[in-house]
Image 1 (cartoon, protein in one colour):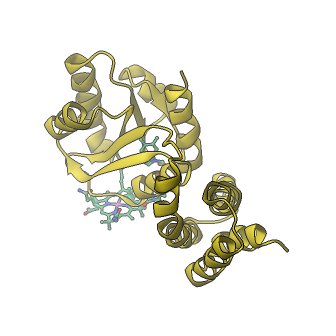
Image 2 (spheres, rainbow, N blue to C red):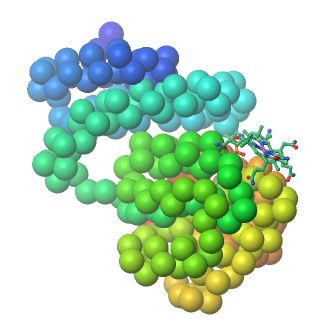
Length: 209
Ligand code: B12
């Protein structure tokens, strides 16, 4: 088995220790950092993401894999930045005001980072004004809004509408258990994804020029 396959397998298995070990080996073998990223770490995360989508693995496995991936990422990030590998784009994401759920949002963040996007995490209980402020300051390519309670879906609508009223060009995607494609369309969001792996596809669709 090649070192890249070992990295991929270790991400899938959720072993941060092994990911660190094999990432160090890959670097000492002279492998290109972006190859380690794409064919090792991201390949592993994509595999888990696809299985999660089909309900073949559950949240704990995804979180373990994401943590393992992050260990590898922190080793090769400085090398990648040095090599000048371009980030794909930026996404600011938060859970709406009144809502404290962040497990799903954090999974979306990990998958986006794994896919090469820069992510600004706004946290939970984020008022609309804060989303607008971040758009002003950081000009992200996409804004992601998460809600897990039916009672905070109206808050999501408020955030999407005000973001668009503030700047018609802002691309907003929404998600969370009670949110549907239909609801996303009704409130004027630019995109929707049912899970973290699909969120990467949705962002890629909106940032492709
Ligand atoms: C864990 C949990 C909690 C934890 C949250 C911990 C945390 N740090 O997040 C705690 C215990 C704090 C909690 C509190 C409450 N909870 Co709660 N909670 C849950 C639970 C069990 C799991 C949610 C979860 O993490 N799912 C796993 C993740 C991976 O899935 P996900 O969030 O849907 O995310 C995926 C997608 O939706 C999507 N996605 C998510 N966000 C985004 C964003 C974008 C932009 C995109 C594209 C995609 C996307 O991708 C994610 C990854 O695949 C659910 C039940 C359930 N099965 O959903 C109840 C649930 C959401 N909670 C519920 C309730 C009622 C509450 C409380 C009001 C309980 C209370 N009486 O105090 C409080 C509310 C606190 C608040 N103000 O937010 C209800 C909501 C009912 C409703 N329809 O409104 C649920 C459905 C339970 C139930 N059946 O009653 N909760």
